[in-house]
Image (cartoon, rainbow over all chains, first blue to last red; front, side, top):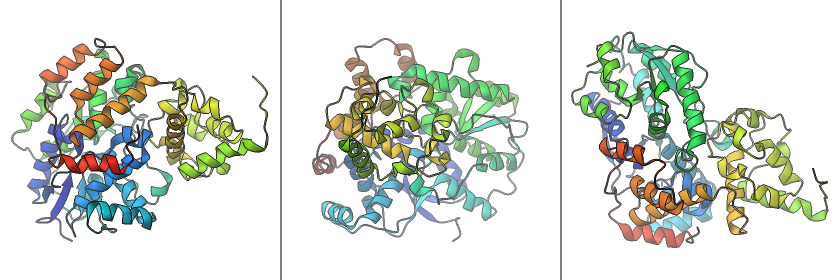
Length: 283
Length: 184
């Protein structure tokens, strides 16, 4: 399948619709450049997030399922948020594993379940784009930028999904093809603490500062993350001495294409990246 | 430490957890990989592998009352590394739901209030409204000031929206909650 000119349905999730609008905008701008068309799933709802599966398994399945049933037929669904991707994938698995549950939701939503619906992690899409040579010839724009690629727990998954592809190294490879230098560092897959940032901030703060300091000590001048939740936590819980800019992966990808309008995205950052961007000739 | 008395009923807890989580506890050989890699281990009363052992010993009350089950955020770091592919996050999900169902003492009421604030926000809007969640959570904890500066900064940067992003078909969300049994 050629990606240019292709149509995907799109699940942004609550974070990208609100706190991480800059993540959403830069992702759109990046895909638009390659003529990959995405259309938001009409009237999507929250995937259920950590809170629902933490305390109410059935509700978690219901919330994720509604989105699967809303998805247009015969179209792969791009899911921008790694958390939402996991929730929706687990719901798909659960419905495929139980005829009884499948029938119950089919009755509730009044349509058949698309058991083969393709859920597309942004990383998966990017790999296909690379394979098709779409990212060639973009080199150099991030030249000299020293980046700590931060995956957090976004690539971790439950044992039931352990046959899925492993994408560690994708951010490093992509950044390298755009001229950036990824540092080697120890905290690339340490969880940021997610919701504990609200209810037990001291725990999240400890983790976040360990991560940020690790990046600084490894010689990075910024962090790049593909998860909006991580982005928020790193920015809000970093102590003053550990505040280096944190970029959304999609922002750096778009920046490499020198998209207009990007200034608006960086204004929304709590750690101002403009000085660094100026230093590296990115504005 | 108190002696652990085991009897015929001691295995019931393990069976219950296995039924809810679909995880096979007998596969754990206590290599401590999960506990060594858990970012939250140092704040937990019992390490993740210890929880498995305690379940096998039938120490239901201790496990359900521990903070471990609430500090686990389900990041799956443990399951990624587990040589026997034990779904630890699913075990913790099961334990939390058992703790709620059996009205156990909740070691981390603040974390539970947060989850409830999120679920209520989804109930109202179909999506999460972060400002509302933060406000309701702070009210429930009677802690209005700890993150006040942060909240104002986030508002100024438009990181927090005043109005929620909403599902239009709110009826479908209401019926979804009804269908799901309206727990919590």
